[in-house]
Image (cartoon, rainbow, N blue to C red):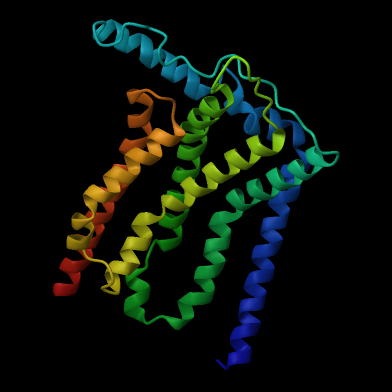
Length: 268
């Protein structure tokens, strides 16, 4: 294919991807009540699934090791959060559009990756195509797991911490709608893309840029970074920090296994 033919093919892939994205955006936009009441604002409600499970975990730990957990409600968070404030005239409308666009991106992500793969695939050799089997599936699954992890684990912990943190009783917190939405969106999307680490390591290992030995060398650095991240976004207790840190460590170790397997296959 000529350069212009490639551009024409890319254009139609982008057109189809954009149409799919806009369809999901419109679907999310017209379902405003469900989008905000059941999804967006759920992590700030005391009956959110994560808060219920943490409360059950707290009671269970108190029964198992009462000497370690003296307070059976130590993990019962998410209660008595302040109301959100909107201080911009168009704030609720722009928030509606932003939330619909992010929801559309999350829902359309597998199709967007599929269209990207359809554009790249004809330029690959048969061996490269065979090595990339299941790419769309694994990229989509890892992104979905990351989004769910960010929504159900990191978001409620960070939202609870920031909405209830006080430096003094003399200060009243008046959190705005915009800061809440930006925090939720940033955490959810960042988690989704962070969980693509194994896919990134796969291709970096394929090209020889990253090796399993290199990942092992920086393992301690990653653990420290994961602990710091967990300490920042979670309430100041050990249990919540480990809930966030452990999946990140597992993800990194899984990346090392992938790099080892790539090196072994390349050596054959």
